[in-house]
Amino acid sequence: MIEYLEAAPADGPALDAMARTCWEDTFRHSCSAEDMALYLDQAYGPSGALLRHLTDPAHRFRLAKDGDAIAGYAKLSEPWLPDGVAGPRARQLSQLYVARRWQGAGIAQALMDWTIGTARDLGADELLLTVWEENHRAFRFYKRYGFEHIGDYAFQTGNQTDRDLIMRLPL
Image (tube, rainbow, N blue to C red; front, side, top):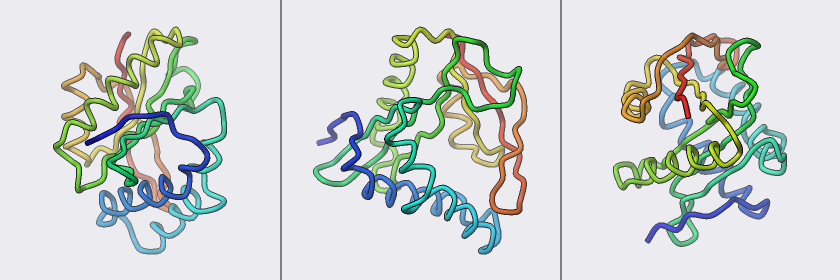
């Protein structure tokens, strides 16, 4: 049975490992081994952004756990997109990952519902996110929730620049 709860610092190592695996499974084919290694070193591991953000109040994490295993998570943040994209009351879905084993089990929907509800509770009037232009499954998921493509974002994967789509949902 899936349990949903707020992440705690003690969840850091398991969350970091799960997120890294999800990223590798999803994007391994899209970049060189060198660029992947550069990105993974920046994002994950003891000095990676995920563990730093876990204790930063600008970010909120919601976990989906199946026993001791982290099946998925959502990370809601203060906007980090370029100036002029986010309004003064916006929030941003920085990450929504579901491990391959649990995809299709409704976890992504539960995490998105939490994200939207929490953003509203924080007084947000819009929710933003970015999604890689080639991640068609995620794009379709966000469209079903009413997100609209409003611009593009240059996402760095090591030395490679990818096109992410900026999407917006009015709240």
